Length: 93
Image (cartoon, rainbow, N blue to C red):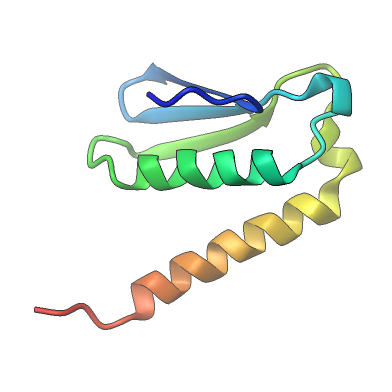
């Protein structure tokens, strides 16, 4: 697994990837670096045929996701739009 500076990535059981936001000093605010690492981790999981689910969570008692809900929502909407586009594109072959 790749090493990350703003997230923690582990596989607590077969088929499960857990992505933990790890910027407690910033209340887990999404930075450009964190966004890039999240995309990399999620795309890496998407390429793994053994992976069934990815869990995204905040790592500290300061649940920064609630504070930065709009940013998280926009980020997830972008991921959803990218996934929809990927599934809607005709496959060559």
